[in-house]
Length: 312
Image (cartoon, rainbow, N blue to C red):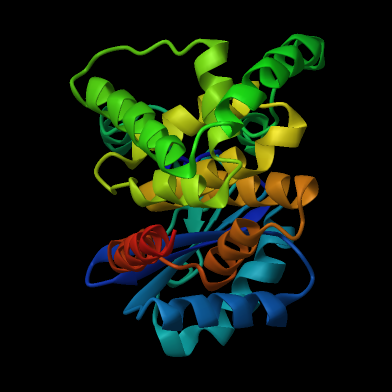
């Protein structure tokens, strides 16, 4: 679960949506009093993703607090087939969907960091942070001490980049992104300079150029786009950050890193609440749209870009 979410959950209720013996989407909420609201949200997400069953896991140091949410939600979702409902204190787990004698009274011990599934997740490039705060830091941008120097570089580069025709800027973003992806796919390490990262942040300030970078994302290489745009975000001053944060959020969604996508959505909403891609990220989150939808969605993005290019 820490690898599916991207961080180790605590004081949380998590639902895995299962369809055709595959985990389609994973959703986490804080342990709250609004049991009906959570059940309705979980139910809608399960139906949207055509669930054949769901798995519920409540994380808490207090079993009473966990059960106060887990058991009623489990009951309200009974029509969807609750495959399993588990309470865990992060060291031991107890099933809440079987009889009183199926689990030992002391629970079943487990170590989330040293088991076969954790090793396989790491091998496939999945990351788990200690908590959500660590994940949020990936979207926070540069340290305050670095901002003056980064602003000076951005000011020096802005005039040069903006003086180029849109066609040339779109070509430049394609060359920069595809070059990075090709080198990383080949197993090469790529260390981008501040100048290169600021150039990327400036280029995607224009929506057509941003969407050019967005349309280049593929599910097989989404992890590379996450890596690239996280680096850009780490050096983008606040005035330039929103498009890069949104592209990081889109790449995270396409890769299946839902928690990182939510962190990006929240940071972008703080920076520029009315930005168009913020609303798209929010809708993806609210509907728990699975990454597989990108395979169909991408064609429309590409067609829109081509139509816009023809008009230009």
